[in-house]
Image (cartoon, rainbow, N blue to C red):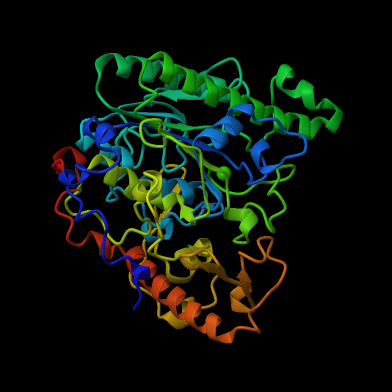
Length: 482
Ligand SMILES: [Ca+2]
């Protein structure tokens, strides 16, 4: 068995003391703040720096030119909720029953916010949660409060112009303006308050844009009106996103915390029309590159001192282990395995090779639920799946999935119950035009075996097996590591 299953969890052996003597010692001696910024359905091509012919994103372009630009950044899943679940947990969303949009976390999972709270971080969520109820059931075990957020201005799903948002679970309140400006303003107020106290903070800023409905302020639409109403509104939404990211960066500087704040920007999945995958095949809901390869940027002035472009494959599941590694947090009884790996060496500018491949899997949730009657829905408006037993691998082989080698070159993709099999050499053929499956049966066989082993592991997690030894489910009782 290769290390595809990630049995050797990289964090458990990383006490904080190891931070000493590294390039980031000055930063690590004071725990960095984290601003995690996620857009909704922004495609790989929906940024100026990837060559969009019309769209202007000056702030994101500046981040790309001065910080760490991930050119092979992947969403763990090609739709909203599952990718967000991977960000919060470091695990593939199928492991905890978050099979599709509108599916939730499971209460047993440890979230990034919960983990950072154990290290004394103040935590705030600003925008789209989509992993459980917000205002509809503020006390839900998978709502933002129970998932580690001290405060939030949030909504169950996407929002747009003049959005209705819930403050800390209160009934929805209407705000005037572009949703991105509004959640960024709330995040800025949080940052200013926390910077005053000197305590480290985690702000999760989850924009509702450029997800449908496409609506933008007149001044944001104006530069694009010659392209037609739909594009003008779509690009206008992204103009507001860009401005909102700029406002957050400015706030960090004005509060004098920019130097030791990690700003990590990404999208949650590929685009819908008129969004752009930048010429990559596929879009939202597909496991072709266009559905899962997304813009990814990271700034951390104390550590990322030179503009850097990385072609190492990275995935949203990496955020959790990376941040825990940087901060030096160890979670006792962490549900395992993780699918993400720590990218800390890469961020610190050290030689870095990804240790593990990346698996993608669109689980046929609704069908499966009907099949075995194991569908559970304890949460208003949200679903989750927990199955009584793992299925035999023969039943899982054909299901819509992909396997990306750790070096990012070969990608194996199964569609339509396994009737369509693709093997792509992404180095030579990033747009996925040439199916090499018949030419390289040996590679197909190897990757099939690895994918099946990973699927078996994921299926096992889906039954709840990862929580069997979980003694602590209340994050307030989790000890700080290191
Ligand atoms: Ca989305």
